[in-house]
Image (cartoon, rainbow, N blue to C red; front, side, top):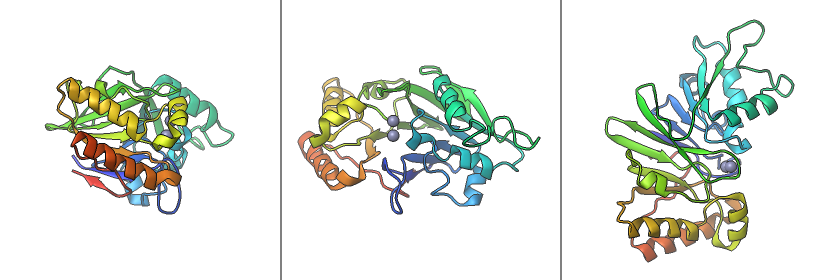
Length: 256
Ligand SMILES: [Zn+2]
Ligand SMILES: [Zn+2]
C-alpha cells in the first residue's frame, strides 16, 4: 500500500494544502485538497473517498472532484457518517452553491454516490479492510485504519485525543497520521477546538507506552502554518523526552 500525503496543513496556500491523503492512487482520505494537488488524470482514477468529518478543510474539493469525474462511467463512492453527508448535501451540493452531484446533472448519471458508515463498523472497499475509529472533535468525526495484505495505515482525523483506540485496535496500524494543529502556546485554542498540540500528543504517547503498547510510526499533520516552526521544534522536544522518532508529514511525502 502506498500513501501519498496531498496536504499536511490546515491551510491552503501555494505551497501547503489541506490535510488529505491518497491511497494507491484510487482511494482518498478526505477531500480538502483533491483538486488543488492532482492532475485531471489522477482525479479520474479516484473511485472512493473516505471522509473523516464535515469541516470545510476536509470536504472542500468534493464538488470539484464530482464535476471533474462527471463523464466517468462509474460514480465516485463517498463514505462518511450520516451527519457529514447530510451537511454536505445541505450546504455544499445544495443545488444553489453547487449542483447536487449525487443526483446527476442535466439528466446525466450521478457522479458522486453517498454511502453511510458508522464508527466501529468495519467495511471492505476495493479489497481494503477499513475500520472507522471514533475521534474526539466538536462535530462527529472518525479516523480510519486502512488494511491491505498485512499493511495497516491509520489516519486519526481531526482529534483532541483518544489515540489509544488506534494503538489497541485489533488491526492496530503500523503507521499513524496524527492531527497536531497547534503549538503548546495555543493549548487553550487546541483544547476548545479539539486538536492536539505536541504536549497533548506526548501525553497520549506516554499513556500508550505506560500501557505497554508498541507505538506505530507517528506522522504529525494538519499543522497550523503560522506556527509551523514552533510546532516542529516542540515535536523534536517530544522525541528526545520520550526517546522515540516522530516524522512530521509534508506535502508529497510518500509512505509505502
Ligand atoms: Zn475539523
Ligand atoms: Zn481540519
